[in-house]
Image (cartoon, rainbow, N blue to C red):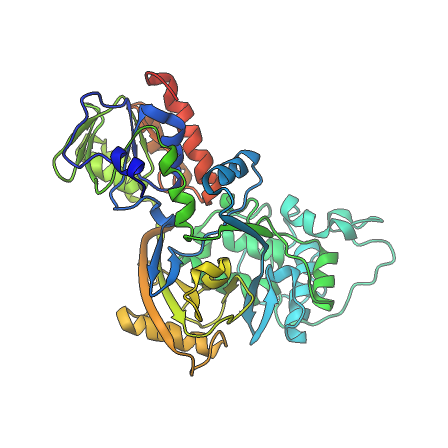
Length: 512
């Protein structure tokens, strides 16, 4: 941190004579963006010793590891302006190499668009299942395996977009074209009759209705159960927008017959800081902040009535407006009994998934050309983020770093702890061929993210709305992934911080 930056960091017990009108809680990407856009009107309070939140990085034996895998991508021009402002030329852009390891082979992500290389029976099940999901069973046989809610009743835009190239000559809306003979294929997996007609009511139904039973069986169901650590029927689908590539049927068949060369999806090309890990993007805000920054300052109590925030050391800060980026249940807990019972109950009902990252520094270069790999089967981890390919400067000389990501929850506890968890990850990496048993392990560590993914259960929206409305009436603005309880990427976080600054500025004196 530069001398200029150090001068702006206020010691914990020193209260400036003229407090800024807005307190921003949390120095992650959203809080940094809010403080930057508020200028001198903001006091940024961060409980850690460094800024960054879950976008921080650590160093170990010459390796740089992020808190889980992070990349830079956005469709918003303003976010790209911020990237340039924060990093300058300390960035490089790459075409994504995202892969899936299943059936002992690698296929490109997304699974449904790149079936080439899988066993023929698996490919057949996936394609027939996708066709049946749109047009109905190819035979009258109906199996017991698939859950209720799958079937031909849903013809919404998600599914139509996948099949519209084949919907002509009377084939639209599931009606076979004239002269088209129905196949007599007797697949392994059929669906039961569907009592419910309409769009998917939950994430599990979405998988079956949009992708079909084959893709559900071989990737989407096992992977998402492993990732989300909650029953998929308990999740709704509003969070899916833009995150799930939906190839049309022609693309799907082509991706089964030939290798897929080009990346698909919203992050097909991404950026990453050349040096400093993802932390460098967060640190880029520091010389731009015009307001004060207090590190090592945890907010333990908030009084909406008194408009005060109390820190762990007893310091009391006054505010006109408060922007919170802390997890929403934690925010309500700091308010305590000042929040009505219905607000506390709504906060307690919010669900999340935790992530444990096992970082491994291997004593061999160039282990793989891939950037990240999804594992739907029996590995302890659901994904490996190949830190060493995010930037070559993340590696120690002669070594290569990677991060094994493991979700856990009350319903799916960690399978091991401490050195035993590291041992399990190393063994599984060897088993799936990431590195060899003879490769030396130069370092291994763990980082924990107690609140990592917010769960979109069926009560989330109404609970968040109830809490937000009550907090807004008390001059508390929610911003970011965990405060708004939304599935935000880091680019969304930057925009959420900007919006929060715009929302509170009319009530605050001055401006940037």
